[in-house]
Image (cartoon, rainbow, N blue to C red):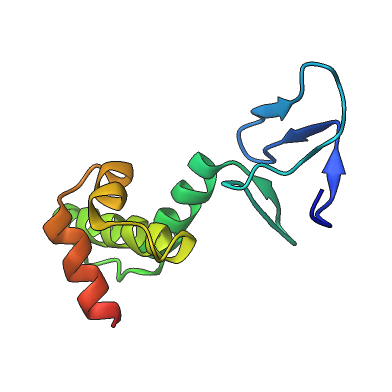
Length: 110
């Protein structure tokens, strides 16, 4: 173990999905999960919360199309922050978008 906390089971505080070893031995938190003061969250819920936070911060006057763009950019920023070395193609697949969209967010973040 690398000094991280180990537990017999990890459960997402938002969706309730859990992971454990079949033999019941303690295991470190999955590397794709996040842990904060708000709780422990699986990758899917972490992505959703990042996108929801961006949309919630958007002006109420935003159109549905604008909210969709805001959500997509938030997902891309989340994935870039999670693994800055990941290729654009990998992030695009995770976010179900184009590599051009990922490259644009990287340039803007620059």
